[in-house]
Length: 99
Image 1 (cartoon, rainbow, N blue to C red):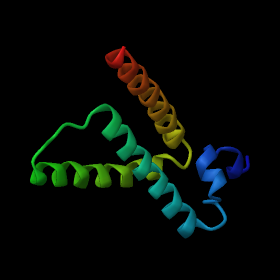
Image 2: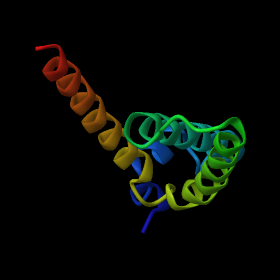
Image 3: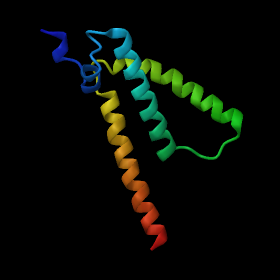
Image 4: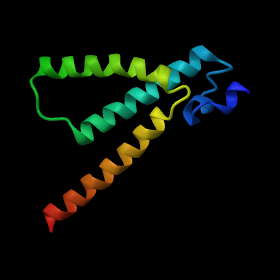
């Protein structure tokens, strides 16, 4: 079985099997940005600066682990879906409050 058949969409898009250094960095940045978007849209609250720094530190650390899983599992794809659902929810909530 060829390994390219088992890669997730973003891993295949960034060609982690051909250029692993650049591909893994791009995959990591994608997962990190999508995680930050999902966190901000769904879970973020006003926190003091130190607590915010700690939250983002653990988010960055967790995304490092998720990047290795995202080679074969649809982690980034799931984050895209979660971000889209949260954007739709926020738009509908905003419309409901203004109506």
